[in-house]
Image (cartoon, rainbow, N blue to C red; front, side, top):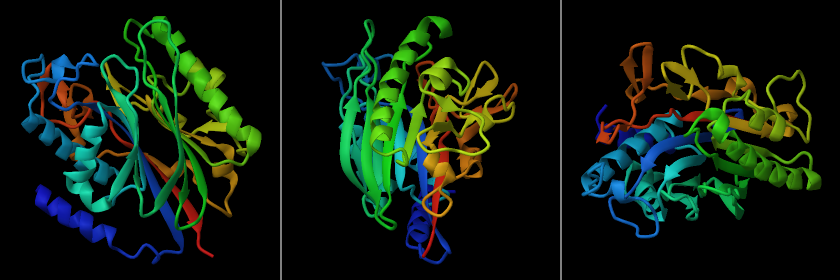
Length: 340
């Protein structure tokens, strides 16, 4: 499909009657978009590789191409509509977010964003995009993850309201320290991130154990790893979800040989996850979701053949811009509420 047609489809679907169904639905997407850097040198960060003279020979033309690809991937993840909320990993700064939301096909959705520059040495951050026509941000905060060695990304928190239902959401966007240097050697860094996040969640549960909490992002951990299960306390199996408890909805994909959010050494895995408070999984009369409403966007244009089937069509092969999308796939979750 040509991109002109894609833009027309975006407009067509977005203006469809949202009230035609018996229930109202809100899609949330989480996506590591693989090094969305501008082409200009920032003297405050180690971004020299993403300049015209740098290792990636990064130019404005390549940047614009990647922006266009990310916009297309996000709308595809929304089911060819624009998601209400999007959590992003690996964005360099507010400039790239402005360009993504204002100078791509996403401009028709009227996205606003929550972001601040983190202490990450490369300058990569997390961000939250939201459709201001359907979601209102009331509070925002950034939780630093104190590490003795290399600084890492903050954990983003935003509290907001779904305008169509009046329900409050508490959103956390994460990009935990990588496995660089070895899984076990780097694990304490991710445990530290989990501790910071757990304290923030506890403060919300202390005030209201029925708070609607959605934790998303690239954790650089699988759903069975200690930082997720023991430190953060996210359960992988349950019969009945309970308020005041966290549940990992992406355990259902871990160990799946045919699909995941990321592929490493020929094996799929779920580094990207949605972790929810129990109230969202048990409150069938109000705003809620279920395991069947968690999915991985597998549009063919996001994939390429490899020796074990297919893999994400990544943006970079080494330092070569491969004109792909990302080394991760977007993951999606739908929240629903029955109409009165």
